Length: 315
Image: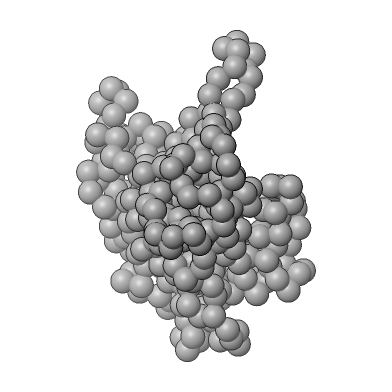
């Protein structure tokens, strides 16, 4: 049932309105799908439960075990642009389809009976379409109440046990599912005036990445980081692909669309800290744009992009 429920949220692309399960005992672990949140984590999120019995909000924030993004199989229907739901949802988000999930343990002291869970986050909430021709308002998570009934009895925290070949039965480390230490480069996502209507054949980034070695090797090179890029070409038909190189101080990332149909919001990437960590927030030093024939053209300015560090420091 949980898989089916998540599939429906994936396909609709909307903010979840029900936890799983819909009824649980104090002490049980529940899962709360909260839509396709961008930048949501435990540091900027609070969760409360308010019983219909006494209308007193109980803070559950300290019981949150993990907040992470779930991705469906890329061969699944969730990645198909042939459905209006998927395509319309993308026009309000401009990033890959994922479902943000909160796992938390319910306190044993909650009042019995029906109530509502409310999640508040300072992660930015989309409020309108990001490009011309789309109307309506995307759901704001902070305004959504989710029904949950507290049942009699004392439940137990789910340890999500699993078996391995050599170590027997182990408990899952849920923090391993949360976003790792990274510098996330976000492109501009809003263009309601069509100032960047033209598409691109290539975009080249130069990024200054100050780092300190944490591997004990005493050097910083191309193996010190890992690049994770998003792919939204299934919605844009750009067939975009990327390549990158890090010389220890400067990162070069090149996005190429052989048909010249890459949109300004497609180049989004994370520089993952593998054998070194960041001394400070990386800085974009250059962005160059080309058409399908290799001619340099104009595009969004460096100041239109954002760069931020995510995850706890490794230093």
